[in-house]
Image (tube, one colour):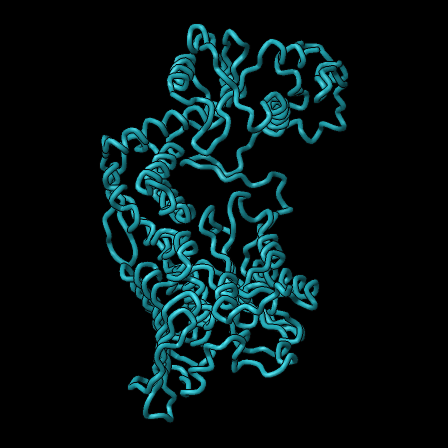
Amino acid sequence: MDVIRLLPDSVANQIAAGEVIQRPASVIKELVENAADAGATEIKIYVKDAGKTLIQVVDNGRGMSETDARMAFERHATSKIRKAEDLFSLSTMGFRGEALPSICAISQVELRTRTEDSQMGTRIVINGSQVETQEPCLCEKGTVISIRNLFYNLPARRKFLKSDSGELGHIMREFERMALVNNKIRISIDTGTRQIELRPGSMLQRINDLWKNNLNMQLIPIDVDTELVKIQGYVSRPEFARRRNALWHLIANGRHINHLKMHKVITGCFENLIATDTQPCYFIKIQVDPAEIDINIHPSKNEVKLERETEILSILGASVKAALGKFAATPQIDFDTDLVPVQQKGEGRPENPDIKVPSDYNPFDMGIGKGISPDAEAFPSSGSGGYQRYNPAENRSNVRNWDTLYNRFMNRQEENAREMMPVEGVLPSIDDNPTPPGKGCFQYGDKYIVTSTRSGIMIIDQHRAHLKILFEDCLRNVRRMEVTSQRILFPETIALDPEQQDALAHVQGELSAIGFSLEYEEDNKWSIAAVPAMISQSDARETVLRILESVREESDSFGTTPDPVNDIMERIALVMARSAAIVRGRRLSETEMETLVGQLLSLPDPSLTPSGKLIFTILDEDRLKSILS
């Protein structure tokens, strides 16, 4: 009996939609690309309920005839290519002919379009791939396409759409990419809570219009033209590297792409120029012969393969380094001085302190054991537990660098401590408290608190312990709305990009309820007038940015939890706790250690941090015997 059947077009389109249309932002991407391919000089985007209820894209492009308007919704119907060889000479954004039929399969679509030489336009209404209406209409030149009730016939898929804040974040990121690619087009978006209109202009003007904050003044231009590749764009100066929200934009042949190797090459050029926990921003356009690039890799068309990738990567790296060098972004070494310049803070302190060291000074003496020669066996070898001889030739470079010696020693101690920690996922149990709680505490490496219990030795990570205590206390106060607010004597100003503005709109009520006071000034700038008292000693600006970043990055989970409001409260409490928690490396008094241990063990679940990391471990007698045996 035959069991293989040909799927109906409606079902096939729904399956294809799963790859092409992942969320409302995907719809906007496909429709804007079609408008750009149609020669539009102005594109308007309207969004309602984060795209779940309505997405409308209006353009003034060429428009479509009655026949073309109907054919556009058929699978693999396209005006971009005619034969397979055309794939190697693509100059358009779209070419598959899958986007519109995929959108129609999962939504209710209305299209109005008219060409310049036609007096009447065409109106088509499609509901779940079924054409309901096709009739003449009056409309402006160009195309207006409205997408309503996205995923209405796929309830499981619609259920897994994120909250409005989460989907709006994806929409704004996609809008930024499309606006940057099409900088010669006037483009605007209206989300109901936010309106942005961008003028046509140069790439640098578009960058500044999108992200403001004088970002254009922080960039270094790149302009390289070779027979193989043409590279234009901008990278940020090293001093403006970011710890968060770094902007990475790669455009290949007019298409925004993700390319890990190119990203590594670009960021690698900043090695030793920026801090290890920061990243540069870059906006780079690459133009190659269409025959040298394959964009037919993924339905989203954001991945490419380059035929001569190695050579292009080399040229890209050389171009970025040349730009950094040309604009004096690389550090310079003065070979005429004996001392490395040291930047000092404070008035009246010299930049190069003149430290005179006696010729007979032996730092390894440390005032102890006078008369012991450097050849004496006085320094233990790492990891062996024994001793090794001091070799003056090997250690001469470290004689005056106490920081290096100390850091190496502490790193060895930390490695030993990590070996003693339990395997991840195996939680320590407390069947008895320290006796008495917290008494007999001492600090190891300014990072761990060590105390004793009836079961053995308890080792506590002081930062994680304080984080847990603050989180529970902050969450309790947040839920009760009992957080005390403290005014800032000199209010801090913070500039927010569109995504951060959307995140702020999502949690502004909760922020106000727990003690934050943010007042809008102008030009996307906000004034922080008050903060919760518990973080008054922390950086208010940094704390607000962390909260907004948490809301934006973790917004995918909003709306999927039974209590999304509580979910937001927990995230805010966690950021506030992280801002106020004591850091590793801080010396604690005996009283502080006793208080910390007592508060930790009074919690219902003291073993794990809010993110699930171990706070302490207990070394019982058997474990100690195995270590010492």
